[in-house]
Length: 552
Image (cartoon, rainbow, N blue to C red):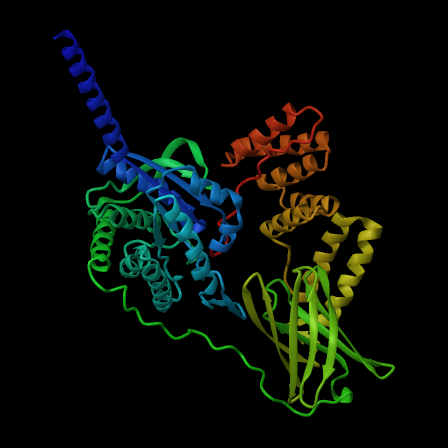
C-alpha cells in the first residue's frame, strides 16, 4: 500500500510539472522583427511588448529586432547574423518589413518612385522558406505611403497582398490603417520628414500588430507606454522610459481603426484581388534637337542639373584636339570643384553622347544631349545598388546661372585651392567664404550639419587629416555648439592625438555645463572614456546622435 501511495504521489507531481511546463510554453509568444528605421523609430516592437503586457500580464513575451537604417530584405539576407537569429529560438512569428520603396526605387530628378518588386518578392520567398523551417509564421509588415503621395498606398498594398497570398503568409495591414487614420487632423502620424513614423505612427504600428497577431481588439491599452528604447541596430536601452505619450482620445481612435481594418482584411477577400496599379511616373525622354557639329557645340557651356543637390552650377568645355573631340565637365559647389571623368564621346547627327564617371559617388552615368535654340538639353541615366536614376541637364552660353557668375566662381575656387597651401585650411576657408559672399551678394557660411557630415565622411574613408581640418573649421565657425567640440575631439582621438582630444572635449564639456546642453552626458562620457584609455586610441567614443535618417 505504501508503494502505491508513493507511486501516486510521484505520478501526480509529474502531471503537475508537465502541465506547468506546457502552460508556460503556451503562454510564451516569441516575435522576431526584421526591418529598418520604419520599425525602430520610437521602438514600435517595444510598444507592442508593453501593450501585450497590459492586456495579458500572465503572458511571457520575447521580442527581438534586427535592423539598420535603409536596410532591404536582400541586405538582411546577406547578413549571417540574420540567419543565426532566425534559427536561435522557436519563434512564433517573424515579421518582415521591406525598404519603403520596395528595394528597387526609381529616382527622376529629386523625386523617388516605386520601381519593380522583383527583389522584394525574391527575398520574401527565401525568408519564408527559412521561417517555415523553424516552425514560425511569416508576417508581412505592410508599410505606408509618404505624406506627399497618399495615392502610392495602392502600390504598397498590391505588393504586400500579392506576395502574402502567394506564400500563404499573414499581412499586418499597417499601411491601410495609416491611410484611414491620417485623415484625422488632430495629430500627425509622420515625423517632419514626411516619411518616418512619429510617436503616433509607431503607436499605430504596435496596435495593428497586436490586432493582427492576437486577433484581439487593442481597445483599452493606455496611450502612455513605457519600455526600453531601441537603437538603430535593435539593441534595447538598459532602463525603461516613456516611448509614447498619447491622449486617451487619440489612442482610442488609433485602436479602433487598427481593429476594424485588421478584421476587414482578415475576414474578407479584401487583399486577395487587389488590382495592380499603374506606375505613378513616366521615364523622361530626350527630345530631338537641331543638327550638331563640332563647330556649333565647341567652347564653354554653363548650366545646372538635378544630378547633385550640393552643386550651384556646372561648366562643360568642349574642344577639338587632333581631329578628336575633348570634353570636360566640372561641378561647382561654393568651395569645391568636382571634375568628372569623361569617356566614350560620340557626336551623332542630332545628339551628343558620352559616359561620365563620378569618383566621389562611385557612380557611372550615360549622358545624351540635344541642341535647341542655343540650349544644350541633356538626360543622364545610371543604376547603382538596384536604384535607377534619371537626371535632367540644361546648358547655355550664359555664364550667370541662378544669379551666380560660374566663371568667376570657378576662378575663386582655384584661388582658394592655392591659398590652402599658402595660408592653411582654416584661414583660406574664412577668406574664401567672404569672397564668395561678395560674389553672390549675401553672407554665406557652410552649415554646421554639412561640415559635420563632410568630416565623418572623410573619417570613414580614412582621410583623417582632411577630416580634422573640416572639424576644426566647424569648431571655429560655430564655437557655441557643443557638437563641434565632440566631433573634433573624436576625430583627434581616432587620429591618436590624445592630449589635443582631451583639451577639445574639456572645452566642450565646460560649454555644455554652462549652457545646459542636452549633449552634456554624451561629451562627459566621451571625455571619461578617453581619459581612462591611457595612451591607447579609444574605440568606443560615441558621437552625439545624428538627426533622423533619410526615408527608408
